[in-house]
Length: 183
Image (cartoon, rainbow, N blue to C red; front, side, top):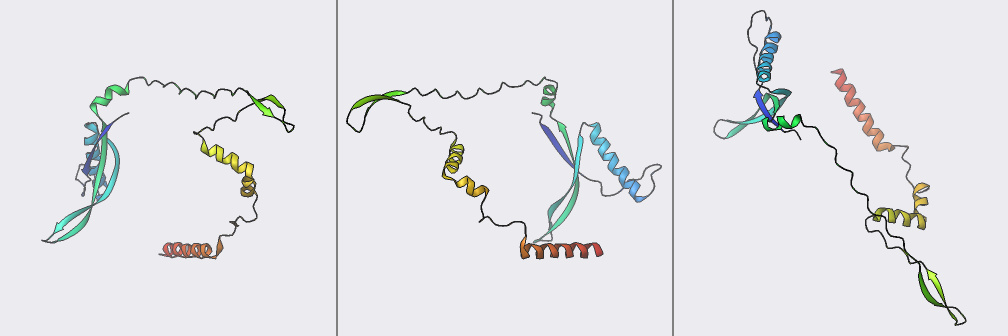
């Protein structure tokens, strides 16, 4: 995994004079360009600009929040540059869980209604798989008929009508959007 180091520098607040650069916007763009080119020459890659709050003291007891514009740069750490050229290798897929062993029938003595005994081959119930309780619960729901209730129920709420509360809220939001657009 590639690791980066970050550097945050203050964005220029004023434009800079330069030959052939006229106007406040062009001077400001030139100042920003100069900072970005200097950082790029040092190996820093521009990421984004941010406006962040800065709490500063004003007087003896009060504080003022000032918003600062900063530029965020990053570059790859020097020790990670060697790993970038390495060939990635795929890991082997995990081994599948072994299938449960088949359960062999067991011969047990059984007595019939007349009292005569004989032997029958009985297959014991397989042990429950503790790893999959969700599938076991779904199967129980199917057996109990609950799945049919969930799929085709007359008691299910009708969601096709949003109701008066949501319609009123949507109307208020539309009015706010219209008021905002009018300004």
